[in-house]
Image (tube, rainbow, N blue to C red; front, side, top):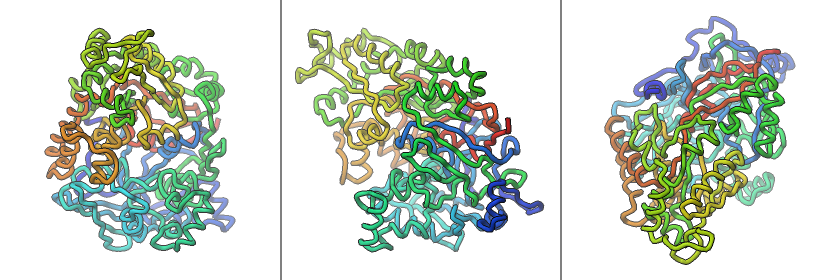
Length: 635
């Protein structure tokens, strides 16, 4: 697939939403909402929708009703439900060919000035929160003044919102229009917004918008110390600042049913319930091409599963209507064999995740850190892996042996980088490890570190479905004298270990290798191989660990600083391509396999699930499929 299909449009200049140009017909709504209107507990649909709603062109105009049955693995799986319904000021949506198109969300229009230093956004007229309160630029100003610039809530600004070290500035023009300004050109800003919105401190991250009428009660610029302490006590958290963030008791949408949202669904029964329930938002701002207010589906239920076997049982028994989360190619034959029994079919998407081993370059064990810093050791880590065997035995032979590098189908793809250090060569791996000073072994044949301890690596993953892969990797590494100790741990603990620099090596789906500048932090060390280095960079040395003066990660940072201030995408892309080259050739992340299909279990009553979509966090995973237009036919 070429880049024109994966990234079908990169918007510049002025664009308008595909909003309704006329009101020639009455809007329709779900029967469950009509009942509320007739009971007098909800305004009529035309009073709940914007004057000119956004239009989501459904693959087929659907029917209202039903409950979408899903599975989730626990509180740490919060991103799975979130990606079903995130909203952005601009977002990636799928075109007819499966390509990713940058599309306006809850705005009437936007404009970019000639040198990409000023971005103007106009909210939809009549846009409302899920509690019926108007959405205005007061909510935007609240986000900027009281959250974005509030160091109690956002201690550190991400470099993606402060190119060249200068934070974005906000100007409110009127009740619906605002401008975002930068000190220099910022040609990637729209793509960054579509991926990460304006970042923390929320879970669904609606760009620029936070409901002032609700959240000001938890904000130190509005509430007294006593009121904040009482709020923390009410939500059972240690401090009021714990109310904020993607895990925040007040601002994480799936933890707080009272939080006003603009998403298609909102939480009704939050975790830790075994069945987490979402219900439609009666004020959702979009309609289909026939004027039907979306979403079509009334409710989404997420049932808890404890292990891969339980998830497989749910699939075989027909208990799921649409699911990609937690599925692996290891079980592909099982999924196909049980289609008739479970009343479903499989729909494949294109996977851009690169399943990878990620050494922690800032690991607290100084001897291990020194070994990770040795390029010969990192090359040995990579060429010791028998990728072809692993793919055959765990991916049904359907993935590709690739390195952690830009994937095919993008303008950043480089064939040499994709195959860097991927040829299986245990003899050379042994030679490199000997040359690195690891030529002594214990009685069991494992190498000894310089301090005399066995060269052991604890490798953590949060998904038991990858146990077989880790078993094979353990055998590969034992062949070159390295003891691998796999650990399957809870996702919350896995996240905490990464955030606290308390891990040796992770097994992860390394993503965001499609449109690199939409989230360049992956290459820069964030949340992975050099998280403490990235902290040091993003806080100007106030936090984290300073890398050595000659560490190539500094080159990557300098290149991003240059790219984020370039006058054109073409000029900026030169720096981004160089970032990718340095990152891949250094081998900080060891790609094993990728570019296989993503398997979706789709119940035979679930409609409008488009095949052949690109699965990447850049495009917000399943969100690219426009879940608002999914619908359930009556059996």
